[in-house]
Amino acid sequence: MLRARYAVVIMSPSPSEHTLAGLVLAAGAGSRFGGPKGLARTTEGEPWVARAAQILRAGGCREVLVAVGAAADEVAALLPPWADAVRVDDWTVGVSASLRAGLEAAERTAADALVVITVDTPAMPVEAVARLADGASPTALVRAEYAGRPGHPVLIGRTHWPAVSASVSGDRGALPYLRAHGALTVECGDLWSGEDVDAR
Image 1: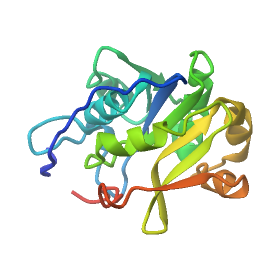
Image 2 (image 1 turned 120 degrees about the vertical axis):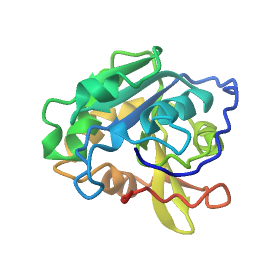
Image 3 (image 1 turned 60 degrees about the vertical axis):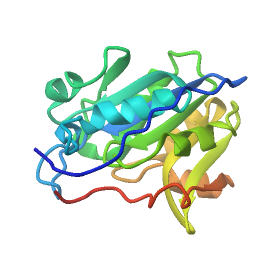
Image 4 (image 1 turned 135 degrees about the horizontal axis):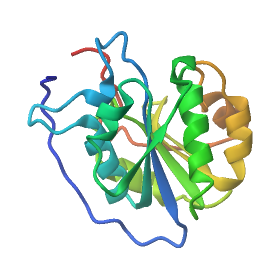
């Protein structure tokens, strides 16, 4: 069991004129980590994947999708009952496969925009999601930044979903698309470090 210490703060979603969905990328095998990060837990025993889903929901996402691949059944079993597992059959391709599967699943929702986070950021506060959610719209492209360094969350408006899906490949995510299309950057370094966890 992973032992790490993080404070848990859950806020109520703030009202928005736009409907948001959230996506947790949790399909990888975690080769550098020593196992699937979707199975990792905090010091208190909370699964990272459940925590990530809660953060998205508390940040304003009405529907929460979780991309699962490595150890898919075990990871899916850790999800809250209101979160939907999205199975990524070709998860070994890299993050692009998870993002495409998540975007395809989001198309079946009524969401105007999708907030994307990774499972390996258990220290992410709800406020980071809520801060990006303030800029939500069907045409929005917003990414968090930490002292000039890009990070998560990322918000992708619905009109961009097909193009983002077509642009990603291998282990390359949406960052090149976001940069090429002038995504709004929102500084979140005052909230937390923005670091993902790559080692136990």
